[in-house]
Image (cartoon, rainbow, N blue to C red; front, side, top):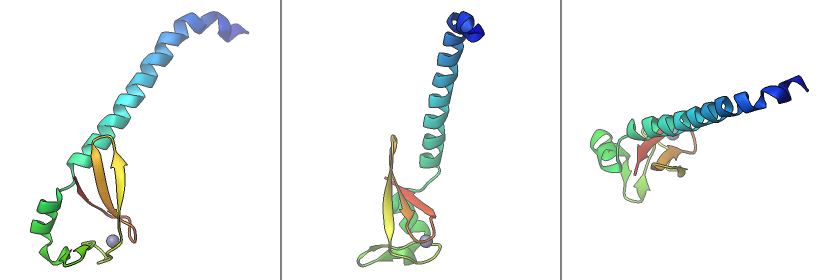
Length: 88
Ligand SMILES: [Zn+2]
């Protein structure tokens, strides 16, 4: 195998690429998390979405919200239209 002879040189490149990819994924999740308002900010922006029973989606009005866990904390997303609403 021709490639086997180059493995010692390719290994650190592969590790470097993998680390860069993991860092990129973490950064992308952090950016998505930080771009969302907190629940308090969400209610300030959309006071009509605060119902007596909980939270409504500001896009479609659905009360079906689910939690999507990220390493930076949960993101709350509308189950109906998929809109990301707020973070915690
Ligand atoms: Zn929705």
